[in-house]
Image (cartoon, rainbow, N blue to C red; front, side, top):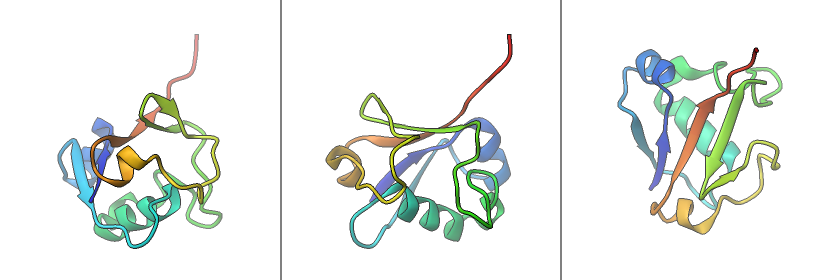
Length: 98
């Protein structure tokens, strides 16, 4: 069971709580987690990653175990603590400006 922490705007869009739990077959990666998230909450398609290219949106970041995983390959295995449900994968909407 993968635990995913959603930012407030995605919680509202998905009509879900702050944390969602997802079943992911095989080795959990960002790609497989997002596939499961979009299957469970189809209204999130296109909000976290582009629907055509499946690339992460520019102002979306992924964090787990105190590390920024945003620039890692989407097919890289997630840390073991996330894979076993001890830690959450955090999806964060980054801010810009000055």
